[in-house]
Image (tube, rainbow, N blue to C red; front, side):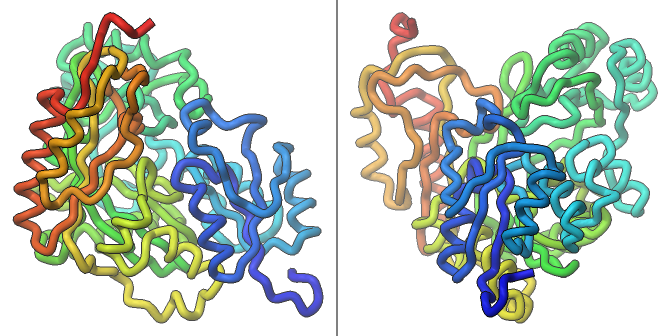
Length: 424
């Protein structure tokens, strides 16, 4: 598809926002060229703060048919999503261009969380029980049959743990359903119903992968510790990079690889969230895109030879070299990320408390933290709006010990001076 004598890989990135903004520079570094595509006239508000795509050319939003003609003229080799909002549009472009990428007939199951779980169930993988409905009474009747409380209620096609409710009775189910149905979610998709699922206890485990021609390579794996917030929502407390010393390391990877194949993810990055049950791993959801929130290059490169972004660029630009790599990347150095949260509204009036982190040996970087004058809100999702504290050391024990200290400072509100009277 290239012009004569031009072997430069040409990659189209749909919605190169969030961590997807790192794709174009990585592809350029590998000798490729990039074109940015917008799946909508403007990015969803949640993605606007990180919408610098970095591509060498950008095409304005249009129909998949029109954009596919433009991409064909430019000799594009691959189209992939940079953010969750671009997954379906990227699939449509691949279909119109006749590109072999991810299985087109399963496209909806890579975004619709109900279809996703049912597709895995049909493939014989352990998954939660679920129902999709806009009727609280129907959901309650289903829940009473399950006899497992709480149940989780959430939007079917949202992101960042938006509007996640943990319900114990009909009243809570009704509040959750009425809150979600009829609302435009974070990705500007209208919620017409909700997804109710049985709740799986314990931390979230994450497997980040890059696939190439149906072969899945694990980039990195994490334990995500979270806490429920009052009323609704969850917020992340800590991400811990896992090593093969974790006793169920291989089990998570095996399940994830089977799940990716079942969902038709043959190429490109993916970000899978799972729970561990007595019967084995069970998927919460996966996204056919990079891990969001934070992939800070400097600390990541101290722990991993290649980031998920690096591996994606390699698979696109030097596929033979990528195919020769081991299918699981093992970390070189322990790393963890502590999330910064606030419990009340307020305006930041001072940041002197951050100096307390200087005495904690494992703290290696502060990213996205608020500054004096910023207004902050209570955290009830996983957007990472208040920033991250990175920790690294030569041994896991040191990282775990220091994480406890950092988390205590965050929980006590010791890092920032906050004036709740100065929000307006």
